[in-house]
Structures are given as structure tokens and as C-alpha cells.
Amino acid sequence: MKVEQIAVFLENRSGRLADISQTLADHDINIRALSLADTADFGILRLVVDDPARARRILKENGFTVAVAEVVAVEVVDRPGGLGAVLQVIKQAGLNVEYMYAVITHGKDKALLIFRFDELDRAINALLKADIRILSADEVYSV
Image (cartoon, rainbow, N blue to C red; front, side, top):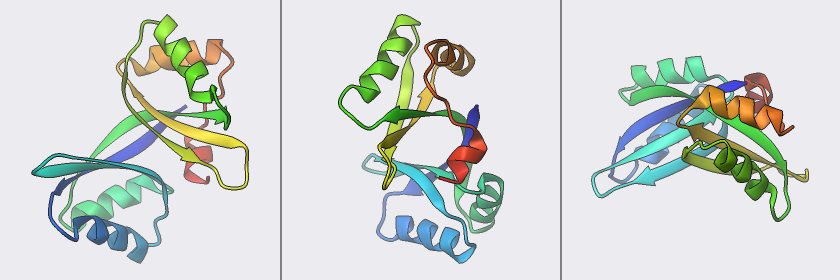
């Protein structure tokens, strides 16, 4: 139920994002979802890829500063209220969303929401109890 997400710390300068993208492409690693947050000096690129262990190793070997975190991937119907239903469950459980990002799956009526919660196991239990579909790591890596 948990998915490995790679976080890459980037200097905020031209070409760094392109360098990561090219490095992953050169090693046939496919990005399934991503989020980029930045400040004046650096950025944090969060990636879900099809082979996180290999991506982590390759990025490190190419000089990038990399960390791995566990996140949860939730599938919702792609319509108004899809996100809200998930957030209401989290709110009622008294949990906090540290961050999230979303992917609209092409050709389907589903959206994939990637969450980092303050209490991951409690969040998973609350979502499952509410019959919200949580994708396995293999399902997410093969989206």
C-alpha cells in the first residue's frame, strides 16, 4: 500500500531539471508522477518512477542528492468532489497532509492522488475503512 517516492534536491539554476530528466531517460526509467517545489536557492523534485531503486542508484551515481520517502497513492473518480471525499476522511481522522500531487490518467475517468501524511499507517487505515481505493506500488509503477 506504500509507494516509494524519490526526492531530488536541486540547485535552482538553469538545466538541472533537464539533467535529471535526461539521466532517467538514458537509463530507460519512466516517470509516473512528479511534483516540483522551489525556493530562491533550491528546489525539491518529487518523483514516482517505474523502478525507484534503480533510479535512486543512478541519480546518486550521477551526483544528485537523493532521498526516498513513502507515500500513498489513492485512485479517485475524475469528477468534482473526488479529492474532497478523500480529504474529508483524512480530516475526520484528525490527520494532516504534508503534501500531495495529482495525475490525471489519460483515457480513463480516474485520477491518481499521491499523498504524504504525517501518520502514514493511520491514514492508510482510515482510507481503507472508508472504502477508498489505495493502489499498490506495482500498480502505480506501471500506470
